[in-house]
Image (cartoon, rainbow, N blue to C red; front, side, top):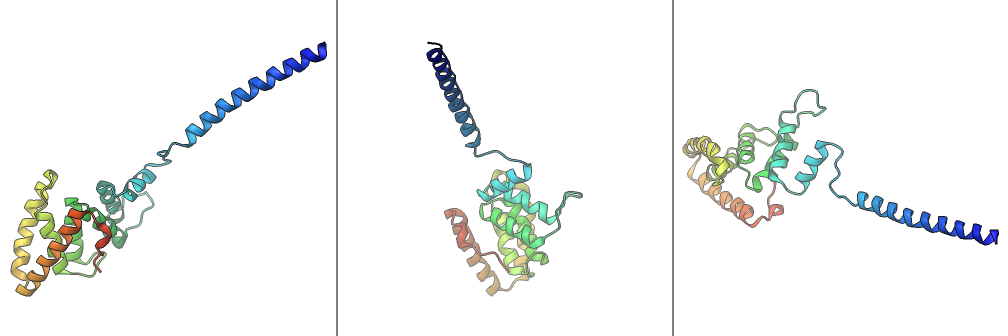
Length: 180
């Protein structure tokens, strides 16, 4: 009889243990299934950039263009230009302005006045409400570059503007190639 009582108690303990383990396992499974657990702000920013967030791409470009002191980043104009270019294609006016400046000065690219004119023009006609201050700056630069470029170069630049605008509008970012 005592044997049956002991077996009964043992059975109840095992049953209770299995039930509590399964609820703990569900809790662990639920915790590990969270997709947005970030160790650092950097990884969060990097993840947002990988998803195509133009603001995150722009901020990463800034980190490589002018890294804050004491953070371990090294200045890398080429890497900055890649992030700025991707943000520019997503119609981010500040990135369009930065990419134009980098092309004009030859930072991260070969110096290319024609391509810089294209991006200054796109930035000057950006209709986002945030772009008002950039539109004013770039409009002056566009007028100045139009006087410096030949008629053939201006014609070629207008064609490139239309190509980039189609890419921006259609959101087919892979169709664009980073200038050299």
